Length: 449
Image 1 (cartoon, rainbow, N blue to C red):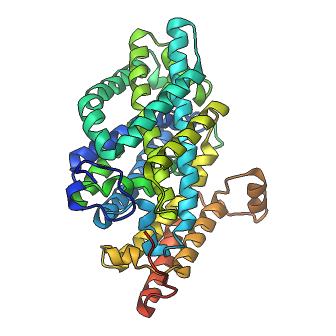
Image 2: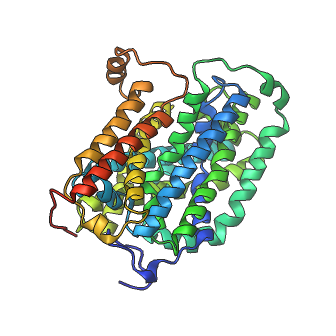
Image 3: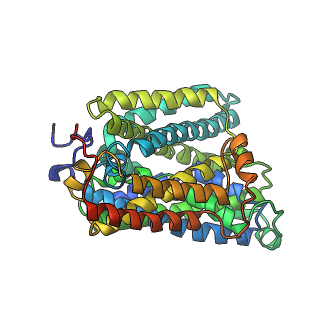
């Protein structure tokens, strides 16, 4: 393996490949946070919430979600293994296959959504300029671009794309869109307008956390290349926090001040804002490709936790192809329930990881990961408890599932589902981890890499 080879599997990353500093990771996560999909997510909050209430939901949700993301990045930098491989420590080797399967699905789903948003925006641009949308063609173009980035790997993307281009272009594009959103809109009027209802502030917080927490089970895929855990923590947390909050707020403002009737119509509304708005949207559209790359890349890395011997590059081609075909077949619609569903899985999953990591002495060794037993039933049970708590307080998913839970008459506590589900999984996880570590590892299996 060459000095710059980033096609590293599930083994701990060697020192020679731990080359990403805090600034590099802030650049990576900052660019991942700059997404039209985040803008669309912000638009979901209004007009159900008033603009002040939406801002409160954004502020609290971003702080909660980004703290989770930062700690997940720190743990990944310590262990130097991919995120789903890291889950062997709290859940066991075979126990980690459960979140791995879910994470593969979410990575493919986000790849589809990202390519849909990119192609929709690009089609709006080309239709505005040339009278031809050709969304299918843009889907293929940006699917190929995401594939090229995923094959280059995280280190290659940071060095060749983000440091040279994105660091200059993306901030200017975001700054212009903020000016455009505020320029002609009556912000004072929409600020004082009440929300229409149908969404509480805490439910809004759950949506915001869902946007961020979807990255938590991917964080270690990138921070394993970090020079230090400290740099991983601050680079990941602060890097994603600023664009996350800024673009969520921008989405809410654009929907209200520009009278866009639907969140999915935002790209076309921006494209109609004049030539400079078109250029800004073009810059963000191109920059969006790194989100598709990250999800396709992490989907492939997650599959390697199930099949360590599978060629990584072949898996990357497969995940990107599936995402591109999905984007060709589907249409951009509201994904609020998708965000809730992700939160219900990954908020308690992080709580279980955190509980086990703390009881291990705030550090995972190779033995903790690769010497883990096959199953850790107590920790898996803690995850299930957290998932059940989330779903009980905020049922989401297929209609039949939601109907069954609502028959249980869940309480309306007014505090959302994120914090209760985290607390439940964390508390049970602490107890289960303490008991299992006193008894010693059981149900061990021979490590296969």
